[in-house]
Image (cartoon, rainbow, N blue to C red; front, side):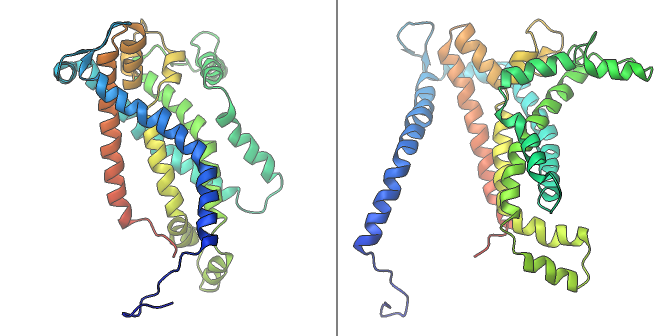
Length: 306
């Protein structure tokens, strides 16, 4: 059906309305969960950030005092710098390895399902257990890494005690943990690329690298963009690995302390929920700004298939 200016007009039928009704009914539980657990948490954190909330006492409105304290707190900015360093290390390397593995596991090789399962295994492992295993591997006295290095006559570093090595050690664990999940997402995107494009490029004489740059990357760019955005958000929220692998008394702790750990300390250890909420509001604002920038920049390199 066309209107007077020649544009197509889509008629909404009872069948479509019924289909939409079923669709919204199926997503309603998840949508409600997101609204209750996430959106309400954001609103509550913003509310508490303007109040003094200590222990079980009733909130006391104090205006912007928490924010004045926040901007004067050097520990907050050090922890924010730490998570940015962590993200700068883990995101490029982790995404690159994930894309490489996805490409390798998208071809016809024997045992492909086995390798996919092995690489995805860290994703379903409990973060606490993963951190404890890596803590043992990094142990300065009897850890596996230093034991292997000693076989070659190399004195292994103090992975978790040296401030210069601590961030690298945490980043290695972060990359290892994220690769499997991102690989599966990218693998799904790769499988949507028509095989005819590769066949046509071979006829034109394109090599493997040219096919990867000219076909694979542009065609998988929407999935790659999603992976980059979610990986950056996850990196800025790093907490469990640091919490399990480092003690606050460690000389290397300040070099890896994350802003989420700082939020945890003020909220659940010092029982200062008001200032803890202010810290997490800052992190929320940083994530929103970075995501908005990425959404703006993605128009220059992400290619959506119509």
